[in-house]
Picture: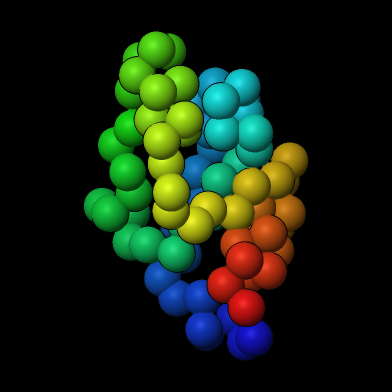
Length: 75
C-alpha cells in the first residue's frame, strides 16, 4: 500500500492514554472533522464509546506505530 492510499489520515493523542482505546496514539482514515466525538468525551462516555466502536482505527505507542497499525488493517 502506498502512503497516498491512506489519505486522509488524522492521528490524535488519546485523551486517556489508551485506558479505553488500548492505544496511546490513534490513527483514523478520516478528515479531522470526521473523527468520532466519543474519543474526546468524559471518562464514562469515552469508556462506553470504545466498548461499542466498530470502526477501523490504528493504535500504537507512537504516531508512527498507530499509522502502521492503521495501514495493516486497511490492506
